[in-house]
Amino acid sequence: MPEYDNSGVLFVNDRKEKENQPDYTGNIVMGGVKKRLAGWKKTSKSDPSINFLSLSISDYQEQSNQQSIQEDDDTPF
Image 1 (tube, helix red, strand yellow):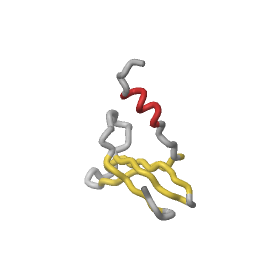
Image 2 (spheres, rainbow, N blue to C red):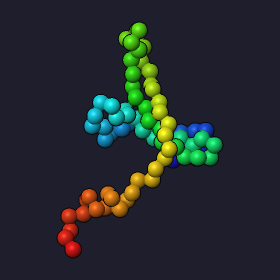
Image 3 (cartoon, one colour):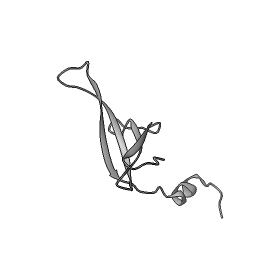
C-alpha cells in the first residue's frame, strides 16, 4: 500500500489472538523493497505514564490465496 520509498503504513491488527502478536501490522518500502512492518504498544518500565510503540521490520512474504481458498472451501469434489 505504501507508494513512496521510505514510507509505510500501519493498521490495527484485528486478528490478534495472542499477547505476543503485534497490535499493528502493515507494510513499508525501503530502498524500493517492500517489507513487513509490525508494532506493539508498550509502557515504560521506569515510568508507567510513558507509552510508546515498538516496531519490527521483516521480509515481506505474499500470502498464499490458494491456502485461504482451500481452508474456506467446504465443497466436496
